[in-house]
Every structure is written in C-alpha cells, then in structure tokens.
Image (cartoon, rainbow, N blue to C red; front, side, top):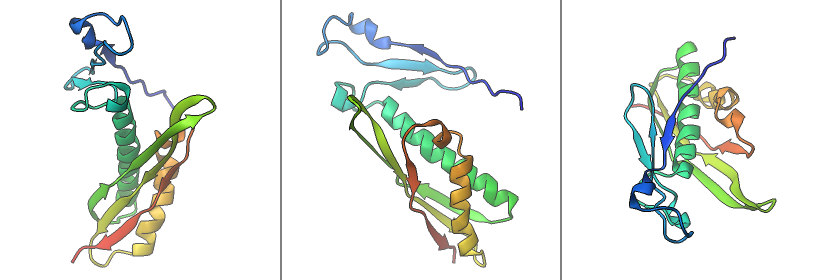
Length: 155
C-alpha cells in the first residue's frame, strides 16, 4: 500500500495581539490551513486560558475519533448492504493527570444508528466492533476508545 500523506500549514495568529511573555497574558489563537479547504481557526481550551468560542485541539481530537468511527461504520454498512438512514454520536473524552502529564485517558463514543425497516439489528450492532478495528484514528491513539452503540429501526 502506498502511504497516504496529509498536510497542514499552521500559524499562531495570537502573535498579532502581542508576544508570549508570560503564561497568563498571551493569546492562544491559531489558524490551520489546508489546500483547497476552508481555514480552521482555533485556540486553547478554556481550561487552558483559551477562547471558549473557538475550537481547540481537544475538540478536534474528539471530532476526529467520532467521525472516523462513523465513516468506517458507513463504509462497512454500504459494503454489506445495510441501509443506514441516520447516524449521530454523543462522544465524550476524559483528560486527567497520568504519568505526570495531563492527557486523554479514555474516550467513549455513543453512536446512535438508524437503519431501514427490515434491517438485521444484530448485524448492524456487530458492525461497530469492525468499524472500531478499521478506524485509523482510534488505532493511532494511546488510550482506550470505547463505544456504546444503539441501533434504531426507521418506521
């Protein structure tokens, strides 16, 4: 398999508000640019003196994990002719001190999948284990990513 490469140009835009002279006083705002896509503006999490109105790296990690599981699930479902009509998730991640560092220690995905009437609910549920195994992002992190899925059947 050929490697898949991804690129990002990153800039600390907070410098426009002044230099980082002391921990309490500098702006945590940043911008990430991707060829052919909208720029992404962000900051540190509010807990780390960031702008709560902007996305932060922790938000983006949660979105990456939830979306990767979703996209893996949808791909598997499509290959197996499972008709998924809706998918949503209420993901939650926990950070705490571990080995002397603040880090993610656990993420729980709560995908709620709606399948077409007549679908095999057990098979739809089982696809979550396979999706977890195929998710590139979950396979790349050093903490558990769990899921508690629910399946509903469309009326």
